[in-house]
Each structure stands twice: as structure tokens, then as C-alpha cells.
Length: 353
Ligand SMILES: [Zn+2]
Image 1 (cartoon, rainbow, N blue to C red):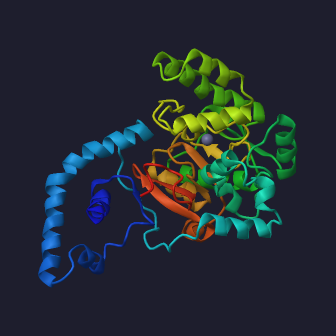
Image 2: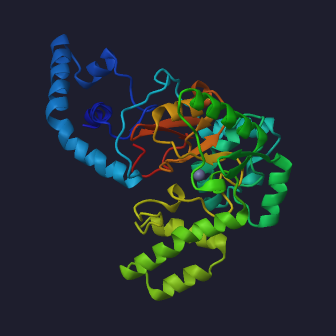
Image 3: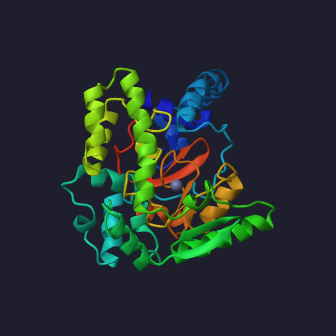
């Protein structure tokens, strides 16, 4: 039955893990229908039947999944040349290699004893395997403004006016963004910042403010639904931030979600305070993210989508797309958009099979 869904999912445009999906070779089909050639023919016939009869039924299921992820219409699959990619390296293996080159110890940036820091690393950690021309943050979670300022100064801040907005990024990230934009403009397209200057660099205080913009309304909602008591809500509000993040992630395990639409983890909606790739100045939110060609141009210049379900958000890795698997990232295609996420199983409940 599992194989049935594996075959069915890509046909119906459901979210599918491209790396874990077996290639659709004849040998795969024979595994599904082992035995004789007539079984092979039968399986082909069965698949045609599935396409005709079952896909419309599944399409409604696929829409409910994608609605949770975004409100954008389902687009056709803008595949880039990633179909023949190799099996991705385990994220922690690639990470160890990358950090060694930078002479950084994993325990120093993300203590193994801190489950929240680990979760953050596994959600947003693609920046740690980025090209050596950029500087990843010295900690998974910044805890104050001074620490952020010091890091940003050391990494270097380059700026560019796009429209009326001053965009600030690490120099290499900005250089490649400008190249991508030039290429887009040559084709009559554009790449512009979503929500002004906040599309790029953010400071610590921004990350706290944005966290509260999700945290506070969610508390009110779950109180109104009697899923949280007034005492719980009052207590959560007064907790130190690190504990607040930990408790929010625990509550989410019970279905009390804190994203904007309250249907998924807050981490897919906004970064936890002090953790954003925007603080690292390696992220840019793009207005034109729905255009497949824009996403293709961004990828060509080292900009990829690495945070599941954060649709306008691009991360600068400065790597070639075909090399991402060997850097410990695997791709997951949702709603026609390709996300490159750390290759760690079990981090994305409901998406990992
Ligand atoms: Zn973003």
C-alpha cells in the first residue's frame, strides 16, 4: 500500500520527498507488481486507471495540504535539473565537515543538551553548510542585541537601494542577489523586497517583535477555544524568551499551533527570537516568489528556499543546486516549490514518511 502512495503522490501533485522517492524505472514497477511481464503490463494499466479515477479524489486532499502551507494557487511543477541527484548526505555528517573547515565546534554553536537549539539548527541550519564566502552565526540562538550587532559587523554588511528600500545583506549574498535581479530584469521580470527593508537584514529586536506578532494572537485564540487557561497564558507571557520558545514548541506537539494561520508550527511562520536567517543577513523575502522562472534564477545564483512553508523566503547558500545533496540538504517539493532542507529524518511531522 505504501508503494501505491509513493507512485500516486507525484502523479497527483501531492507533497513528495524527491530524494526518498524511488525512481520510476521498470524495476521499481516490477517491485510493485513482482513476477511476470504481464504483471508489469497490469501495473501500467492500473496506474492509468489511478490517474483517471483516483487523482481527482486525491486532488482535494492535496489542496487541503497546500492550503495549510499557503493560499497561493497550485502551480505547475517548475522542475530544475535536479531529477538525477544523488542520495543526500546525512545533514550532521555534512555539517561536521563544513564546521571543521571553519574551525568551529558544533557543541559551541548549538549545545547538544539544548533541544530547542537543535530543533532550530534542523529547521534553519542550511546556512551552516553555505559557501565559505559567507559567515554563519556563531550561535544557533542569539540572546541579545549586542551579540547580534557584533556578529553582523564581523560578517560585513553591504547595502543596495531597491526601489525605496535599503536592502542589507552579507556582501557575497548581495552581490549574487544583484546578479539574479539583473538576469530577471533582462527577461522583463524583477526581484523585489517583500515588506520593505525587513525583507533582508533584521536585528534582535525585530526578531522578538515578529515572534510576538504570532505568539500573542495565538495565545488569545487558544484561550478563546479553552485549549489554554488564563493562568497558562499569563505564565507563558512572563517566561524568559528561551523558555517561552521551548514551551511553545512543546504545546505544538499537542496541536496548539502558533503560526499565523494556527495550523502549523510557528517556526514555519516566523523564526524564534534570535534565530532568524535574516539576522545572519543570508535571507531575502521576495515579492515575486510565485514565479517559477524567478525561483529558477534565484537558484542559479545560489539563493534557495530552505525554510519549509515560508514561501517568499530565500536563503543564500552560494552553492550549485546539483551539489546541495552532498552538503547534507534534501529537497522536498510542495505546491511546485522546491525546498532544500537539512537531511534529518523526523523533523517535519506529517511530511516525512
Ligand atoms: Zn524571510
